[in-house]
Every structure is written in structure tokens, then in C-alpha cells.
Image 1 (tube, one colour):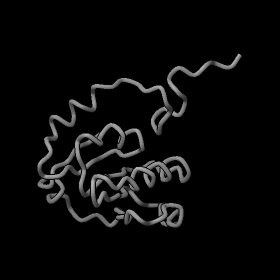
Image 2 (image 1 turned 30 degrees about the vertical axis):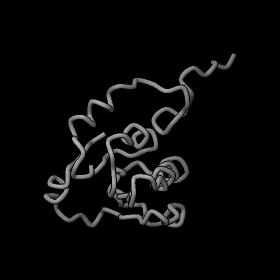
Image 3 (image 1 turned 180 degrees about the horizontal axis):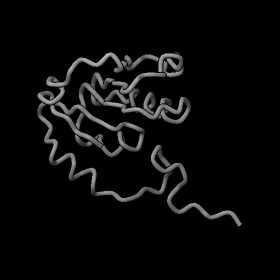
Length: 129
């Protein structure tokens, strides 16, 4: 997962292939707009508002979106593992968050019992006979 600071994001050139989705929008309603979209930005207006997790999951699982999904807004490093598991590929960290520490946190877990966007089968699923 790529972690960005506000300075790095400010230096990016404007890109017409970026779609910003409000956190109360239904991703299924924009399915027709996805061809040609390189990145979708999902906003966390408060770190306690987790609707963007559901939006990312819907974009990946139901719509098959393969491009970049960036978390913006009130993004904390404590949320990064769940963001990655939900389908986010990038996160624009809040100004008081340390990107290096966030990268270290992403490396602490090598697997999960439950399936997720990266690995749909549970880690210890029984193999079919």
C-alpha cells in the first residue's frame, strides 16, 4: 500500500482519470463511469465514519474495479491494515500521521483467518476432497 503525505499529493498533476466519490454515494450507481478511471478517491470525513471501507469492497468485489483506490480525509495509520484488506491501494495520511510508522505497521501481519479483497479464501480453509 502506498502512503502519501499532503505535500506529495499537492505536487500531483491534475488527472482527468480520477473519480472522487462522496462517502454517501452508492458505488453501484457509478458502474457505467468506471471504464477509463485510473483512480477512485474515497473520503473519510471522520476517522469514525467507515462507509468508505464498504465502498472500496463494493468497487472491488461487485464491480471488479482493478484501478487504484485512494483513502482521503481523516486517515489514521491505525486504519491502514483494514484499508488494504478492503481494497485500498493508497492512503493520503492526515498531517499528524507518520508514513514511515504506517509502513512498519503494514508489515506486522502476514495473514488473516478471514478472507478479504486480496485473498478471498480464509487462510485455513479446508481443501475440497
